[in-house]
Image 1: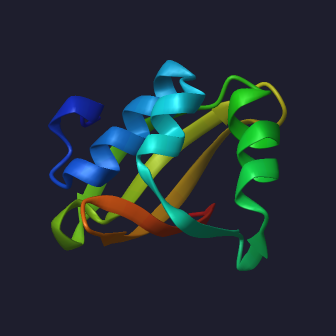
Image 2 (image 1 turned 90 degrees about the horizontal axis):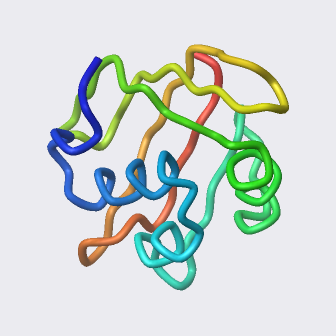
Length: 106
């Protein structure tokens, strides 16, 4: 596993740390104002998704590997809603913040 503090891309590192700390304010601060996301190929409302899948369910990422300069991750994601699953994450970064992320089962 790669400790979140050692992820290569600073914007991704900030977002993963916010998820693992269950810190809504830090999560929002790591995103651009117009950030978007998709889950298993379907665009979702980012705020609703984060409330349901992360903050309302104690979401946590354990990163197995990173690629593309730290903008693509394979991680074990777990929450109280779905349990644990192997997931892939891809991040688009703009001006030091995450503009979009796409996640789904790996």
